[in-house]
Image: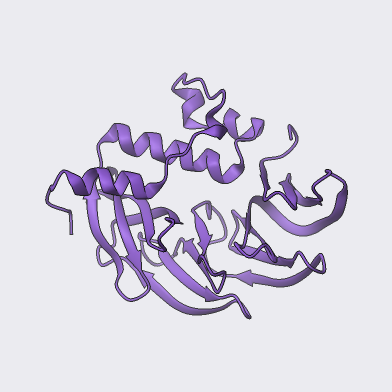
Length: 241
């Protein structure tokens, strides 16, 4: 695992990403396939039904592979910003939709796009009402609710504070809560490591490393975004929308 920037497993398959090559292994770590053709490909994700592997590049592309046939199905260019596309993504629990955070050239704020996984056509795109609101990570809880971690800017473009919110396909970002600096930084660093599979290379570039925090065993810990939202909602504070 030392050579990979991103590494994930679902018990049946394991996938490692070096940036230029994607390796697929079976449960015994026998190599089944090796894919190339996508630069800066660091972030692999399985669909919940286990049939699909998606790799997101920090360029404006993601690719979709069939795990049944070990073949390329789609290569999608999703933005006109060719770089810094390192924000989060997730599948719906039933694997029917894919949610992707996408940076935009003509606006500060990023979009959250929804794709139909039958053909990976974009069926909707949400931009925050406030152009200075930047989503960064998106994930489901066990009940089918979507949560988003991000940050807000001052008018001069400097980060003001982090936020946690819910997200729905009907209303976009809702019930945003302002985070303490400590909570935002911890969750941002943890989610960055989590999506990379806590690889050695990812740890070398982690904010935890620069903060001098011991990351030993961190891959066995869980910090869902839903728990962060519950923490701030329980305080009954005024949300920032």
